[in-house]
Image 1 (cartoon, one colour):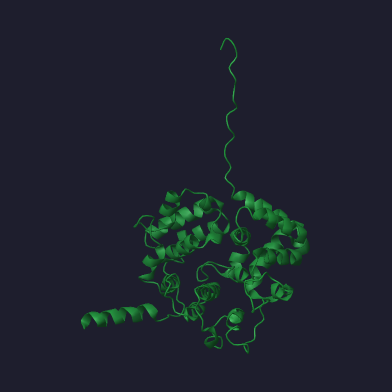
Image 2 (cartoon, rainbow, N blue to C red; image 1 turned 180 degrees about the horizontal axis):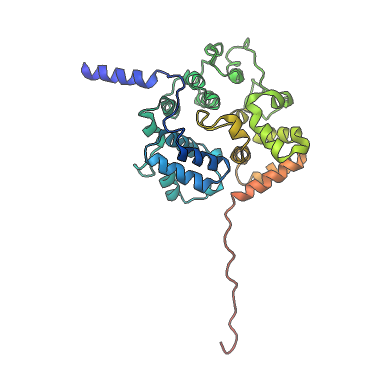
Length: 322
């Protein structure tokens, strides 16, 4: 009986959402310096610093490292090209064959970390997006909706009128209830179809499109609107656009992230990951037809992820007498 009581208390502690509170260590000077280095796209310096702080028990560093480790678009070329053993040693806590996520260590004390641990569990509850939203993690809330939808969870129609349900995700529930209105530029009868509706108003006005606007305002200012539309189409789906933004908004506000070199690179990396290596030639061809400026930016970014081998030593043929 005592064992059942203790187990029920543990489950209650794990599941009750806690509204946003500062994350332990987020104002630490070394952590702030590492974050600024990461936003400047100085990956080696930033991630090495975060890994050291995570090993010292700093929850803010543990949470940020864990989300970066779990999410490919947040991984720049330096991290992506590291050998697996080095990468795992850098990004994860010791244990197991390939290390363990720092998120579980942070979850012992941080309610925010417990939300991500729950999301990465296949048994995550359908109302988990509401908990992320109440914590101010809007990108994670949208990602949680899409993750649960991909796992075949249904029942979102019962959640859309909750004030904490992301308004931009109402379209997910529309197939369940045709009376649900939404403003997403998608065809709800087949969400796997390529984008067909006019996305220009959404790109111009939606807060969720801020990372696309920030990239194009910086990289292609002469026609930022054409660039943003081309980038949106290159992503291949509205759902991919909705998961752009800061990895952890409690630690890095989305506006700061979107305006940073790492924020810009994350959009480009997300586009890059929308197809495999063979498909990127076609992606660049389509991008050139849509916006030459964006195509040039994409081509340069793709090049950062190529393995550059040193030139082979020239073969010197022996001659008579040598």
